[in-house]
Amino acid sequence: MDKNQPAEAHVLTRAQRHQKKKAKKKKGRAWLIALCVLLVLGAGGYIFRKELMVFAFSTFLEGTVKEKLDESYQPIEQDPKGGGEEEMSVAELTKEPFSVLLLGTDQRDDEISRTDSIIYSVVRPADNKVLLVSIPRDSYVKMVGTPTIKGTRSSTKINAAYAYGGAQMSVDTVEALLEHDVDYYATINFNGLKDVVDALGGVELPITETIENKQADHEKFTIEANKPIYNGTEALNYVRYREDSDFKRTERHRIFLKQIMNRMKSVENLTKIPELIGIAGQNFKTNMTSDFMLSLAKSVVLSDSTPNISSHMLQGEGVSRDAWYYELDDKDLEETIASITKWLDPSSTAADLAVDDTDAGGDSHTDQEGQPAGDTGQ
Image 1: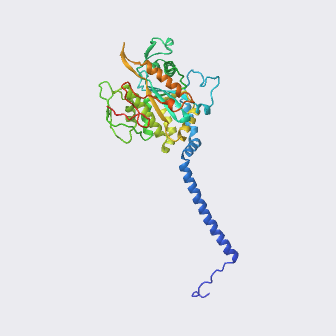
Image 2: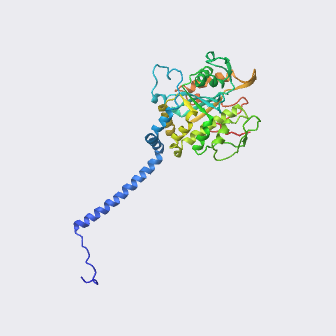
């Protein structure tokens, strides 16, 4: 063949030309299908991101988390929830209103552990609402269970119940005070907060003025105002601070709980749950089963927002006997008991759930959205 002559064009048969066109169409259709799939997955990932989070959690993390939660399970003597002889199912338990007694301890070294924070909460999963009733730790109340404990008095500060008889005595004493059952309890040692907050990458706190411990017999610390994020040490000091008032202190505890819930719901922190529970370790004890807590956690993630929190602190005034006590106001206690009754009633309306959040001076302690107002320090 003459190299100067152009190569003979390759002539395709009709069948070959048809096959080539078909291959091009298939290739184009494949790209179109791939693009559609990507769009669907992208839109679905956005629209159903919460469902995907729950799916991922259930698939990859739930088994590990359940094992760790089982280590924190510590039952107490009480009748099954619902008043029957048999336990209600997890599905039933996570739909009906229930109560949880939150006990925050601040035990250091070998000192006797007392409850620094006592919050009777009512959770309404169906309408994503939570009531937090703070009981001042110095409240003068009748202890339940003291006849079996040598050397204790029949009435004293409520925070001593945990020192005398652990979670059992705290639950029994609060039930007698508020005239309602405690379905569950959860004890958290504040010392475990530091590492948990740091593992979450810090927490947002509404501190608008510098907080500083100044009293001679208190541990010295300073928390700067208006920081975008606060680390574990700062968060621990925030809940420990007590140089303003018990009302503001319990308010800070409620604010911290809300901010931690917000932080936990972020996608980037979902995979840290096993680590967080491992960090909590001995700092967390409860009579809630792992199945119940996991079911409840999923419902929180699937909800449109962080639960709407209403709060109230039992009112009273300081009195001096053999020591300083907080004498609870009978009228406020009666009204609080009535409010708890409504919150535990599944048929209650939004109007029934209205809560008076003002203190003894008539000052409100919630913001415009009905959440605890930001702390202003001292």
